[in-house]
Amino acid sequence: MSTLAGKVAFITGAGSGIGRGTAERLAREGADICIVDFDEDGAQMTANLVTQLGRRAHVVKANVAAAAQLGTAVEECVEQLGSLDIAVANAGIGRGGPVLEMTLKDWQDQLDVNLTGVFLTVQATARAMVKAGKPGRIICISSLAAENTGMAIWGYSATKAGVRIMVRGWAQELGPHGITVNAIGPGVIETPLAAGLAGEEGGKIRSSLEGRTPVGRVGRPADIAGLVNFMAGPDGEFMSGAYVLMDGGLRDASPVWNADEETMAEQMRIMASGEERRQKMQSLLDERD
Image (cartoon, rainbow, N blue to C red; front, side, top):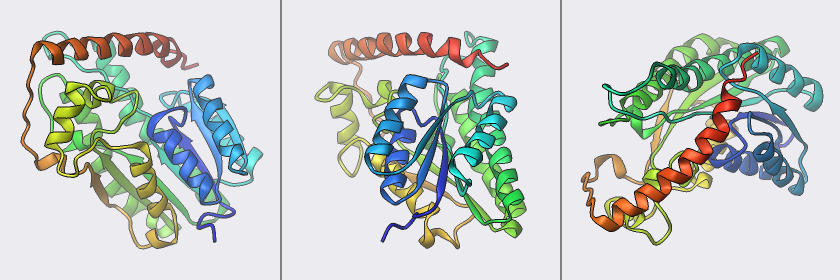
């Protein structure tokens, strides 16, 4: 029996990575999916996966940092799919850099998407759930970086630590409405956002990471999607205000980094590819009207 039959899931950042993996998993469990992303091409690819599984999909182009766009997305979800039972606040960006060089725009963009965007997603979806008078599940994607930080990633860590703590307060406020709120802290997952950390298949970065990770491999979107499914399903009914780290044991592993010539060359290739993606997405991120 499908554990989420008859449910509708609203997933931000569902055009790739963890968001796409979550959309696919929840669809397999019987949910219809509202796919929210500012990358329409990626969102449509996710929609195709969902419909191939026999579930309904509705795509909304929206920037989670824009309250009006997000409000419209929630309205469309309810109008097109009939309800909103599960919300996954997954959309996020990475803007690393040393404190002496970080631009105010990069700092603000990261705050707007990773922190304010999660707040706006939770607020808008929770309001829809309360209005409908039905219980709901909200899952926010935090990060291992909420616990560990370092040079150049401290800004990202700050936003993800904020998500981790906000969930605890939201669980107190929304519990009386029958809404649970939880957070997941993914480790290094093979996604476009974490490409620089996960490295290339067969490359030295990947080999080093797998060697340091107790379970011996990099994370996959399906790993996180499975935990989202638990929190959204009947077995997660009594869980609220929780933060669950899912990192293959990496948090407590030795932080060894061998920056030899081959490793640096791989890093530069990945960074160049990531910069192309960032430039493509930046214009979409700046659309907030």
